[in-house]
Length: 212
Image (tube, rainbow, N blue to C red; front, top):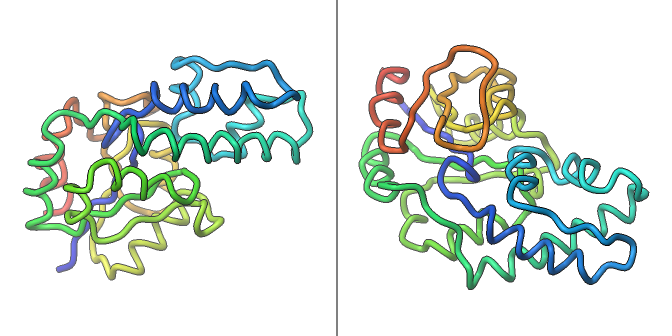
């Protein structure tokens, strides 16, 4: 039987909030349309949302076309900055991924722009070998739930589970029809009782129980 574990990225595999805030504020400072500067608390509240949703939350007073152009500048600066200022991996990440990869296909599905997951691998090249696939709305134009369904089908998974830290991740799992594990050490809370882990290495037992 072909089994897979699909992971969210921010708040599940790593925390890049400080680095992304620094990059976005550099990009925002160059735009005359706004004097906005964001904080890590702001960024934490944006985690798990699409770029379009974040743009609306950040700059509701600016017209859609302009705020999306500003977001593109932010994302471009983010990729450039992260290449030399990596986010922080959660403890015991690599050894846990290595163990999981012996039994499951490992995949990343994140609500991010194209290039962000690739940047994660650039910053942590030792981790790329453990992942069979990845997807994001920046490549497909689809929401997270649709992308979870897409990778399940593309990788011929008979059973799969999604691991994420936000309500949006849980909702996407529901949409895709796969079980959900809450990474409770991350950025969000869930509105119902679900299997949860308080440290990344606990995903080994949690996934084994669901995918048995």
